[in-house]
Length: 280
Image 1 (cartoon, rainbow, N blue to C red):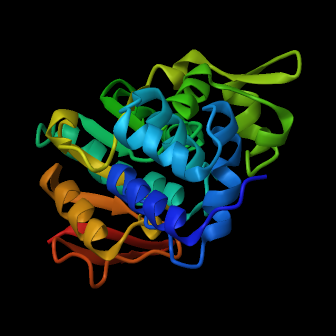
Image 2: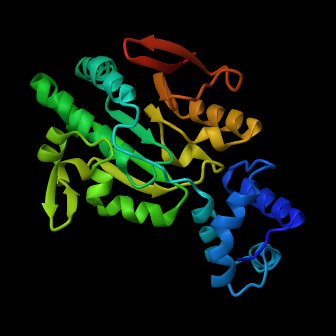
Image 3: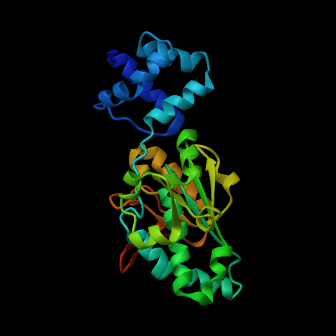
């Protein structure tokens, strides 16, 4: 295994932050060393410095994508932390359905940012189906919902689009009754039913880019991703998201994350199950 020098580490972590917003701390040398070691060999390089020079000066777009892929954390599970989905079903969907019914709103637009292998947006779609199953008077909500799921990694998006999960993935917080209703087993794989997958559109997107192309949203899930960003980039991302949200606007962050100190565009609102940030 190649050894990563301090100077190589500084160059690579600056490159990573510049191209995907991930701020790698000064004490995380092992992270870059282990995640990029395989790429050094695959790229035919003899050191981490050669890898850096190749992606920096040869402007190899595929190598850049592979480095971002390797450094992006893809930890995910179904209905993560549960409370955002409970708040969505019990508090937000009734409000939004009533607004649509009263012609105060045309549709429900949801953005799952940093969607990883698809568990989050598919969990959102299943939550909407469950709400409509329990409230048949609001069946129209399924047809009126647009879910955009984005991630910086093209390889993880390819897996998300397949909507096929093995038994290990299914064991990670999937509810048994949801599995029976919304999946079909094919050999050792569990495949999500079309009624769920057709609600979700996947698109590659870097949060550093202009968000105007994505449209406007009523609900945004930006969960367990901003924690990896620098202070300045967090402020930038939160502000750009606020500019893309319809009022009242609902923003979900991870259970250990906060917007306090990073944005004045949102204020925390407490629900029975937890907090949601609304546009101010």
